[in-house]
Length: 294
Image 1 (tube, rainbow, N blue to C red):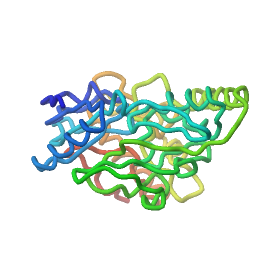
Image 2: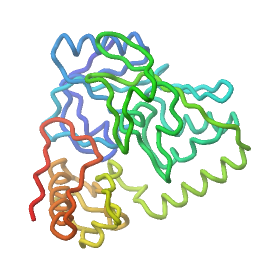
Image 3: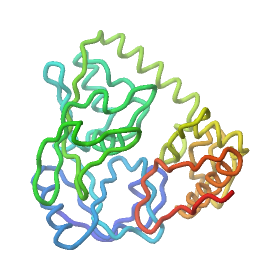
Image 4: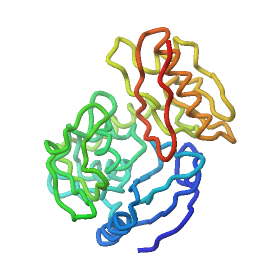
């Protein structure tokens, strides 16, 4: 295990902001991951996995934690029968490619989610009416105490939420998919990709969706659009003119700029609709949202 110190998280996140991680490890093997978790436990460090760096906003002051990225064997994906097996660091794009090549459908929705298998489990990611809970069969979870397979029922999966054990890392995932013609899979993916490009700022630096959709008639994006927030700017960060539930880094943005925009968005949603929006993005380090005022 090679441990690095003070690695800037701005280089590892899709939004391109964030200060240094106290410790950083690229784990290629399960044994390296387990060693890293033992190290973090011995030093009393929180463990954070960055994956592709989406769905993450790291504090400008840095993160006092062991930050992990899973690579090598922990980022591979293979198929056997109707099962797609993936390392926790396997990107959704790689998983979808392997599934399509094997004529396995049911994972097409993940083409809209720029993340990894492990990240998908942690937040029960979803898009276009499907989510991880629909395709998961079991999850390989590592902690400082060891590694074991867990069933989805043990994770209490709900909308954008799981109850993984504290300090745990998703080392592997198995999906149960279904036989489907390759051309049909390609057509579905092409349709979803075109829809995503038409409605989301896919060519901008963002961390993905900012807020969870509330239990209300309006989704978060539409609600914030009606609050007049499209194009609203603080520092180098701007609420996307294309989709109001995204924040773009237009150059020189800080995580503090992003948090200020999030606070303004929550304030307006509470003021106009009486809704307290919950953030979907993971906040790392000393970052905290203010309570929305009315």
